[in-house]
Length: 473
Ligand code: FAD
Image (cartoon, rainbow, N blue to C red; front, side):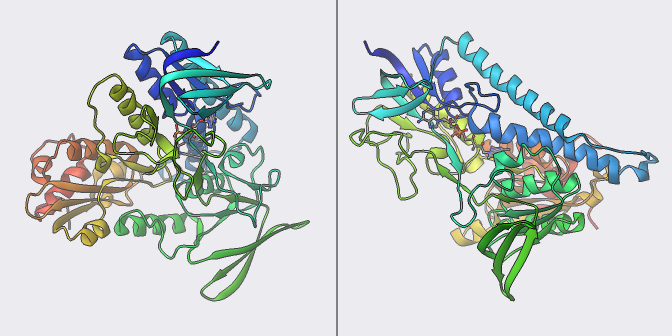
């Protein structure tokens, strides 16, 4: 007999598991199909984000940052340490423990909310039926009034640089090295390449990042990208722009990357290589031919403004549809679809979704960049404030970087806020609230920010829109 649910969610990443929890909270009989097998060879919930993405990368960024702090940045404080060492296996074990705790936590949440976990691979059939192939090969079918596709994404493998044991790896492989590479190459200076490159550079690797694009961090505001690039250079992160990889060879002396830059053909020999050139939607094999769901030319599920596919009652969310590949975007879409199914009228403001890069310095922004406003012909005013003039940032030894605000020239409404510097990942939350509540720069300029805090840089940037920052030279 076919089991029947109100909702079946396919995929239990931050899109799918959140959608399932919200559906269950709303009283819907919910099942979630998830096929993930973790490092310990056990079925696991949480998807890319919890198992091999956001969480483990932040765990290693934290460990490596602590190591570098002690190794390089404590002498001015009068703190010196002899015989500093890092036990990489222990660092990886700590990361694995955090992952297990969090993925186990999702399992608890599923139990508490009465969500059925169908372990195995799901495939959408016609008529809102989902075929589930369990890990032992058993095939069963479940049906639902509504199906939410949340199959996420996987790393793109380059045909010229196929994954090879621990030498040529994707981001997941770079989260599991038990030794520090002497020389590390990274193809791709995007968020993942920069974060993973930072982890291993801090621990002592010589890191070269090869990037095909001419602009560093093309999606970020130019002032922010310029400041970050300068700081990465100072740290010794060697970022080579306008460099297109032509060939990757593996030999006894390591991995040889041949690339072309404006000066001609170059070669780089490294011990290990991370390929971080982007991710693709994980939709291959997820749909029967007659499922009715349509994919675009990049394999993403085509949805309408309500995130519904061409099949009424079948929705798709997260990395497998158009839009930024971000965990919080996936989760918000999961909530939206669940609430729509329950008859509510939810809304997502895609202009208020924050972006964060957890390097040192952190980079974060929400809303429009100057380039986007120029392209759209929107008149704007800017205000910016350097952390060099912020007392708390100075005390923290993190006074590089800036806050920059863009406000509508006519209405003064805040259209974008950009950060590079200390605690940018946390500060951006204040900017999200400001944009979401349609604040003007004057609104924030007239609020009181605690002293001394790095948040005061936001206040000063808002004052600067009108040329009245108090601590700017
Ligand atoms: P996923 O998390 O990819 O989950 C999809 C799930 O579906 C998986 O568990 C998969 O096993 C399952 N699945 C797929 N097909 C099937 C099927 N047919 N049947 C059953 N199950 C299936 N984002 C941030 O916002 N912040 C960060 O700091 C951040 N850091 C990252 C660091 C790294 C190294 C990486 C790789 C990514 C990072 N991301 C970050 C991106 C983030 O992980 C993704 O945007 C997010 O996981 C997308 O969620 P999702 O639910 O759409 O898909």
